[in-house]
Figure 1 (cartoon, rainbow, N blue to C red):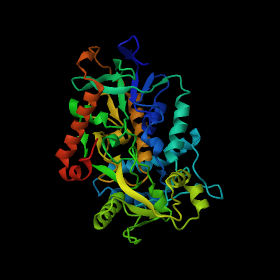
Figure 2: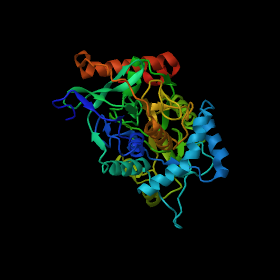
Figure 3: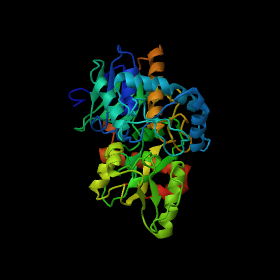
Figure 4: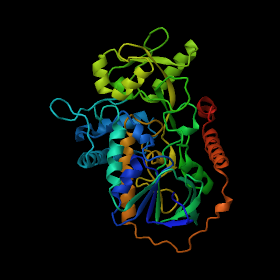
Length: 443
């Protein structure tokens, strides 16, 4: 219970979100800073924990131009070239740090890293831990962060407002699991709240990840960028059940899986960028008047698939499908935000002392469509850069801290409805065609 018997908590830095971006930022901040990490549900209920495919890395300098072009092409050349350059150049150091911290990546029989390839990559440059790379990295970082005395974690606590005056952030207003509200006063706030999947009927995201940071940005005039650039993943496991959709990773197609229509015909190059594959699937569904297509992995035995993709293989088997022998029904689902709270390459937002990292942030690195397995890397690279800037910031804010009238805030249901409409109305304003196609069935 965070707010029990007190309406105000003071700390040095508040991080909102316990995913890979928030955790890495916390670990990169100076240990003499008191850091409070709050998260909306349990600590491990974050989308980075679900990331299957892997994390990209620049293997050698000869691959830079190819990696850069692959990222730019996937993003329809709407990427910020500086952000892309920073991400790629920073990747070897970040991966080395992860390995030093104890993250285990799969290796080949010689003990060297087993690099794989996914859609729109021309070379094998993706490190992975089976098909649970996000879980391996996030769990490792969380375990280490929990041992740091300067980092405090509080679960089931929701940010409901940003405390600001004259475009300077002084902290946040939050509500704990018992409905108690209060303010957290701090020098800096890092937003790492993830995307907006909880607003969609079909999504691979946890349902509580509903874009709270974007709604608050709209309320406070904090700059957003490309809020309508939302990636639809081509292959989620088709189900009539409610709840989060299970992702069948692009890495499965990278290892030879093919897509089939109702006539058992291949209809696209499975290794094209995600948006192109999604459009191809949508055309087939319209053509055959179905709500799914099929994926199968004929180039692997059951034993090989179970070893390489244990999580995916098991999930398919639970639905009655052996992905190496059967046609597994799949359908597109909302997956990832390329847009978000606008930042520079150091995570700075348009509000002083407010930072955004991970899927919450938009520094332009992904452009209009994210290249597979760049998300974990982006989260790590720019979280560290934000932490480094905060560590070196000597700015002293005014002691005139704005007052938060806790009585003004509506009940949870009303607040959630307001946030949802703010975000969806902004997406509709920016891109009505996308809204009509993908957002009209939001919760």
